[in-house]
Amino acid sequence: SEMLKDSAPKDGFKPRKVHVIGAGTMGADIAAWCVVSGMQASLQDLDEAQIGKALKRAKGLFKKRLRGKTAIDSAVARLIADPEGKHIKHADVIIEAIVEKLDVKQTLFAELEKKAKAGAVLATNTSSLRLEDIAKPLADPGRLVGLHFFNPVAQLPLVEVVRGEGTREEEVDKACAFVTAINKLPLITKSCPGFLVNRVLAPYMMEAVRLYQDGQPREKIDQAALKFGMPMGPMELMDMVGLDICNKVGEELDISPSSAGKTDNVLATLVKQGKLGKKTGEGFYVWV
Ligand code: NAD
Image (cartoon, rainbow, N blue to C red; front, side, top):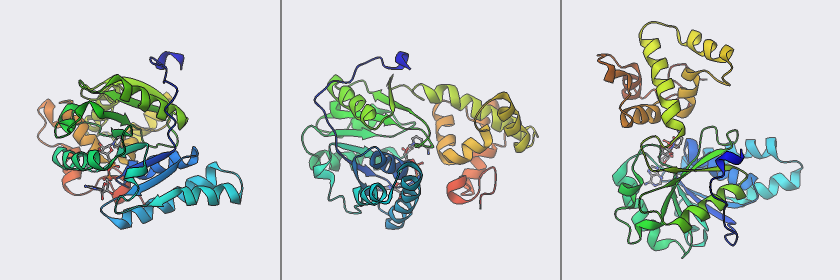
């Protein structure tokens, strides 16, 4: 793991309060994880029902990870539902985990920049958009950094700290210090499509989709991966990640199953049908 620490986080930045925008698959789990690590986290979403679901899921994590009623109650109290973003101005780190759409993220960051306190980290969890593009409307684009978490957040120690072309070194250092403070492992990557992990992982997933399109049963593909030693098969993993996200990453890297001259692309079709994986109850598998 020493190899991953290609920059030692600087002392001095001691984040205690995190504000997360987007209470979906990633945002909910990022906020909950920050709380497990002792921080206070406020959680914002346009859809209040998402925040409700997130708080419920977080409690499950607290019960699993923390010992004793006092610790669990204290964690519950440190996770704050904040539909209107009242806590933005107090946050040391602000993490955006909303829908993967450039214009929506741009609008949000332009607003966040005005509300955030000086010195607060402005971070995006984007998987496929260019940091430089998201930062464009900012008065200080050098402030934006990527904090790319992996799903499931509670189980995967790695977090990619993405340095955009214009990102200031100081912001990268602060982001690394934050990642270390929540007991994860920061890996600094360039702002290239797929960063590092998805460059390796996405072709594996897309190849599994091609196999499935060629008639291999999904269970067989997953079983093969499991017996090979992977912790989870690629079809199940895609359902966990969200098929919309996988499809987007595949397109971004120009390796989506349709790019090989196939007419039927199962992944894109499922996304069109609203079958996005575990979060909607169905993807490659049916989830109940
Ligand atoms: P999701 O669809 O599960 O959740 C997105 C949430 O954002 C929804 O609850 C939605 O109501 C909310 N939202 C949308 N627009 C908003 C706005 N303007 N203000 C406030 N809330 C808004 O999505 P997700 O899978 O959690 O992905 C979120 C981000 O994280 C994306 O950028 C994605 O690329 C990235 N990401 C996803 C994964 C993954 O495995 N799913 C992994 C790493 C990074």
